[in-house]
Image: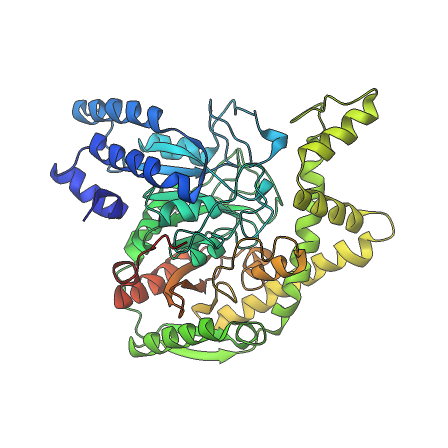
Length: 489
């Protein structure tokens, strides 16, 4: 097996036994980036030369005992909306094309403390607004399973890089499904933690009450390992929760016999692709064979989640992106004669069409006369969504749904139809609205060989339960060893 085909926990074992060195692992990945990046276009900024130098230094630190972490020397990729000191952080936008962060986000500090090696900043939909990574200012990332299809979004670069074996794992961010949906499209594992479990300090904000950083990995054990690293209270983030530190890998091996899985029927109705539904039904049968108690129930408030999400998300985006005005932050137009021109032209030229669309929508729902009718009502519905999930978790340990109603769609087929693009998030947004944890794992491929994602949702701060359920299914079905991306054109 090639080095780049190994999971992180397999790399750890080989480093510990002396079978592999840090420089060998890093070289394997930098070579793989050079080989595949031209096809996949997952990176905005590659750090291959810097990674090679860092690998040599890390080997010396490990040899001298200066660093003892079992993750020292493991490469990683970072979504390009997390601040990395001395490296461009563009959010895939012209507005921040030349912005070099003066500090590290808290999650970057944590991976640096472990001695991980940053291979580069990964492409995304501009300011994390999109479901296909077609709204990047720089490039359109391709799905390694079929280069004519999208990798999902907004963390499409992160998911594609992991699927293409250009990084062993990556950090993404999830505002309405932006970790889970691309993970489903690219046949990898994507975990969106509970809101407040992972610090958002240094994450460029899209919608502050919805955004959450999380891991995209080759398997469930790696997701638990990376969550161990990045989870924890941070006084620099006022929404960060101070809960007891856990080792999420301990939850993986537990027997799932008797676990109660709820299947909300609203997620399996109109709009779901028949082949996606078929794979989910097969997964449900597997859980039953493993001794899980599976029951269908109604979560009828879910039908309001998408509308609620887009009102809240656009309103917060309008507020958060107000700072990018050509004066305080970001791109400044050369075409101006007065202050008003600077504001207007800088924002018109610096932002792409999807970002402008959401700013306009958000400004509208926050405006006088419409605030009560839209934004206030959306927040009331959000509370109802939370209460409905609370009722569900009084009865069930885990909820099971599709991650996306379809598999990855062809590039260009939805980018000019915003409503159709927004519907790609229909299965994932309610998790963000309620601040819950959710994980997407592959559960098979369709007749065209494209991966299908299954979403498992847990109650707040109960990541162990969804990781346990996901791991049990993954071990039973062995998706990663059965299927691999083919880079079809």
